Image (tube, rainbow, N blue to C red):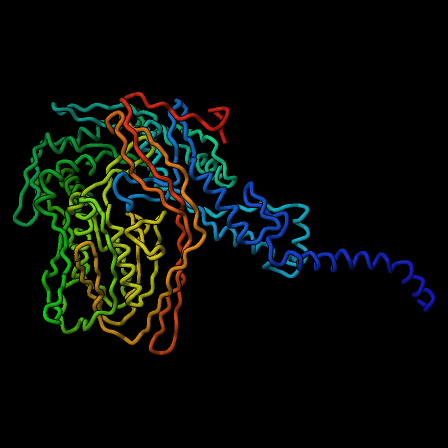
Amino acid sequence: MNKDKIKSFSKRYWPLVAVVFLILVILPASYNISQASKIYSGISVGVLNFGGLTSQEAYNLLQEKWNQTQTKGWLLIDTQGQQVTLPVLVTSAGDPDLTYSLISLDIEQTVLKASNFLRQGSIIHKFWGPLWIKFTGKKLKPVFKIEQERILIFIKENFPQLEQPPEPAKLIVDAADNLSVVTEKSGTVLDEAKFWQDLQTELDNFSNQTITLSVKNITPKLTESKVAELLPQARALLKDLTLILKYGDSIWQIEPLIWHRWLGVKMENNQTHVGLLPELAQDYFNKEIVSVINRPAQDAKFKLDNGKVKEFQGSQLGQELKLVPSVLNIEEAVINNQTNVELVVEEVKPKIITAQTNELGIAEIIGVGKSNFAGSPKNRRHNIKVGADTLNGILIQPNEEFSLLKALGVIDASTGYLPELVIKGNKTIPEYGGGLCQIGTTVFRAALASGLPIIERRNHSYRVVYYEPAGTDATIYDPEPDLRFINDTGQAILIQTKIEGDNLIFEFWGTQDGRQVTQTKPKIYNIVAPPPTKIVETEDLPPGEKKCTEKAHNGADTEFTYTVVYPDGSKKEQVFKSHYVPWQEVCLLGVPKDTLVPEQPTNLETNKEN
């Protein structure tokens, strides 16, 4: 191509090249620069338009919308018209430790997700993407933490009629040793897939529409005809044998009329046969045998006496009857026309065994945690003492991961705890565990003071006066959340607990290894005023009686930085962030029996499926 043709071509197409260059390079570059400190236009979260907002503006908008949504909750309605509101928080009538979130929005992560969208990835993605979504739009989903297990429990407690377990056909042996067959019955279960889909839609759009609870029918696999075919096999097992159960020097004699009632149908690998069912034998074993055989393991516990570690409770092996293999042994004996049966008992080892005190490496206090429970009611004080006594004297071995829930063990009346009432929908239900977040918070603070790595910790749903300063608390609730940390000191740690007036004190004893611990003062920001008082009508109080179960709390965010510098110069840093929801005052108001007015759906059509 000669020079004249090149000049002609350039003159003809230069404007087009310039336009293309402008569209593909200059325009996107200019747009991206103008949006440098903002969320890109076209980005939304649910029904909220975040385009053009700064991160703080998006945070405030999201906080305001979520506060409106969570205050209302979601009205659940079944096909029979029963209605109960699913709240964001389940609240306690006596102790904030029993208040927990069913649903929580991670506002910070949601805003971060929107702010970072198209700012990471390939060059093409980052350069041309923002201008593209300005015109096409992009809807992001908010980041929620949904406690599915607790929500299902809430639904089943308030709508027990939804769950009608199917009953398979079964064999019955009456008092005269006559065999008969009971026909099967179909059942119903909550359609969980549909419910979670409906709830997620509501959450993603910050909507408070009514959610209709649907059920699925379930037909048992074991039918009357299948069981009837097994009658000859069942009659063959109804032998006139008096069984002798043995363990050590203990003997239990079981007449035929007792063990015959354990007869039933087993399904294994889609095959059916007659045998003895452990679940039918359970009642007899619990009444007659378990109390004689079972013995819990006992951990060793230690105390400090004049600067020396001394054992005050020796470790002890436990033992436990194993029901299933024991019943299998009985079944095998019956089949072989034998009368003597050895029960199966397992040894249970303690978690902490008796150790030589001069090998523990416990020389000094390595960290102290404190909290104040002034104003706590009687039951709460009682539970705090029970929890503190349970932990007093236990050892955390080197490199052991400590779980507070595991260390506390069973939390119910059998271990000395007292219950408090928890509000679940239209019911108040007694639950155990009040006061134990005082334990969790104090252990958390002692672990921080000791410079230990924290593996799991969650703050309370709202600020609680017992756990100020805000951001330094830790909530626990069986089975979760837990408080967990690692003993990385290289030596055992001994926990010593004290209650001095209204102060709970946990001392961690061990051996200092030279690590240096610093913790910044919690920063408190994004303070939000609480909504108006909520009145909950209940039939559990005398008519007209009012009982306020929750005080109003400001919402807020907090954070503090936890730094550990080790003797070798290495450093680990953790930032503990906490989000507390603004919470309204909640008061119960007693109404006469059977006069509660059903809540009205928020949709125009009560049977609308979302």
